[in-house]
Amino acid sequence: LVHVAYSVLGLALIIASSPAIFGVIRVGGALYLLSIAVRSLLRPGPKLDVSCEHAEQTQAALSGSVVSGWREGFYCNLLNPKAALFFLSIFSQFMTPETPELVRWIYGAEVVAAHIVWFVLLALFLSTTAIRAAYTGLARWIDAGVGLVFGGVGCSILFQEARRLL
Image 1 (tube, one colour):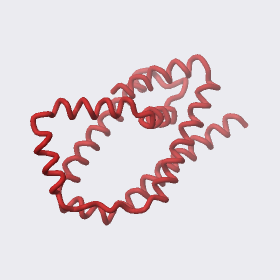
Image 2: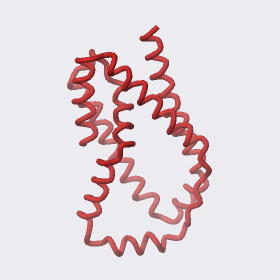
Image 3: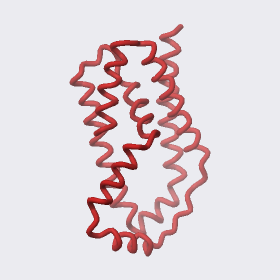
Image 4: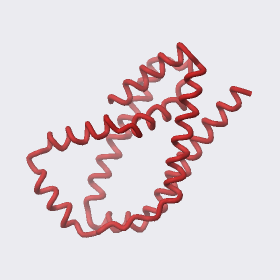
C-alpha cells in the first residue's frame, strides 16, 4: 500500500509538472524491467530441498510471533529499493497525463489485490512437499515466462518513449 500510494501520488505530481522527467522515469523503469527479464532468462533452475524439516522448525519457532513476522516482512519490502523501482516502472506504463485520479487508485488497488493473492498462494503452495518438488521441476519455465513478460513490457515502454521523442 505504501509503494502504491507514493507511486500514484508522486507520478501524478511528476506528470503534471514535467513530462520530460516522467519520460526519464519510464525509460529507467523499462531498463529495470529488462534487467529483471535478462536475469530471469539466464538464471539456472533452483536446487530446492524438498524436505520440509527446516520449514517445520521455522514454523514452530515463529508460532506466536505473527506480528513480528509481519513487521519484519513489511520493513523488508518497504526499504527494498528494487520494490520501489518495480512499482514505479509498472505504474509509469499505465499512467498518462490524461489518466483520471480515480483510475490511478483503481490501478493501485488491483496491484495490491494481486500481491495479496500472490503471497498467500505462494505461502500455501510452496510450504507443501509435493508443490516444492513440482516447483523445482517447473521453476526454469516459470522464470522464463516472467522474463518474457517483463521483457515485453520493458520493450513496449522503450518503444513508446522512442516514438514520443521522434
